[in-house]
Amino acid sequence: MATTHPELARPGHVVLLGDSIFDNAAYVNGGPDVAAQLRRELPPDWKCTLLALDGDVIAGVARQLHSVPRDATHLVVSVGGNDALGYAPLLQEQPSSVTEALAILGNAQDNFAASYSAMLTAVVAQGLPAAACTIYDTRPSEPGQRVIRAALCLFNDSITRAAFSLGAALIDLRLICTEDSDYANPIEPSAQGGRKIAQAIAALVEAGSVSQGSIVVAGGSVGTFRPSLEGLE
Image 1: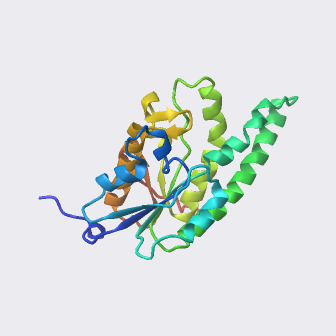
Image 2 (image 1 turned 45 degrees about the vertical axis):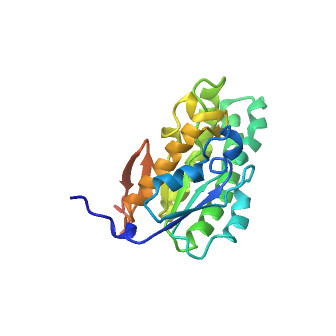
Image 3 (image 1 turned 120 degrees about the vertical axis):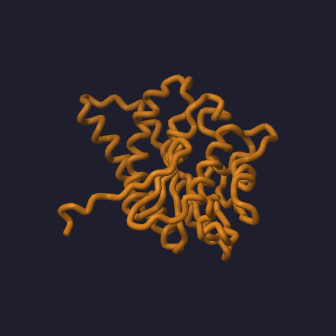
């Protein structure tokens, strides 16, 4: 007989922060958005509030945090894709060497990392279980997808480092939205992709808290990352 995790024995309230990865109603042709699909996936009596806003950037999460309901129990943030798009003109630069190109991209990464770390610190400071989502790679058939994927590695590295250093959970959308049909367009999730994202969030909630490490959700599975403390004592 299956047992219920103690955290699921009482109703919870998941709050979605960020951008159009969660606020995708305008892109699903009348289908359910991520919030609606998450409500179906969560345990009975649980609630979901959508505070994410289509078009928002990392800095916008600070405003969204002001509206977090008092009974919130979990915070999930997916943001940074629009910030990364702001750096797209760098791909048209013509540096004289690979070293110069990496230096240009490194500066962009530093700026992104500083903004993202400050944002996630504020989310974690709410004192609730928190999770961060990586930026997905866009649909596999997209022209230039390999270049996009390589460029996004810079920003996703900042996201994973921030999540692990702050003890937040990580939902790796790169391993969840892997098919063309998961995308409504190059940068928004379809109803199918939204369902996969909702299922990943529900899996995270059902996993409960993990002490001394970060939960990682990828491709529907849940694992635990525990940084090595060897040499730090």
